[in-house]
Image 1 (tube, rainbow, N blue to C red):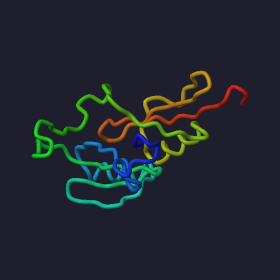
Image 2: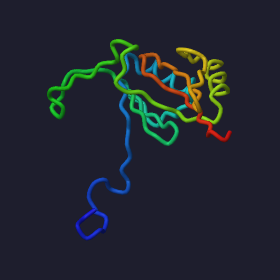
Image 3: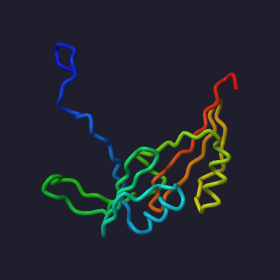
Length: 143
């Protein structure tokens, strides 16, 4: 917003969208997992990357690589230790147990079955590279 309270026409522009980049070892394997397990839709696919649409968001699966001129000190690598995470995704669901059963039937691998923590029931699913997805069902105290 500018000082006068009107929207600034600069960043972000009305067409901007956020894409989350996930570094993977094998884009073809990961593409199959995201399509078959989560039901993501492929928007574009290249030799070393795949652009997916999932739950109104964009995911870009890319192979690791050396620094480039626009990120001269950054090297991309798939997660080294699946039990050490710096980010994860949460998928809010209406019925955690049902979602868990459906994804297991599709071949999904979970850390545990759904666990209840107060008003929330949740469980965690890994992709082939160890990226972690939480399924979360929240029930209000009056439910």
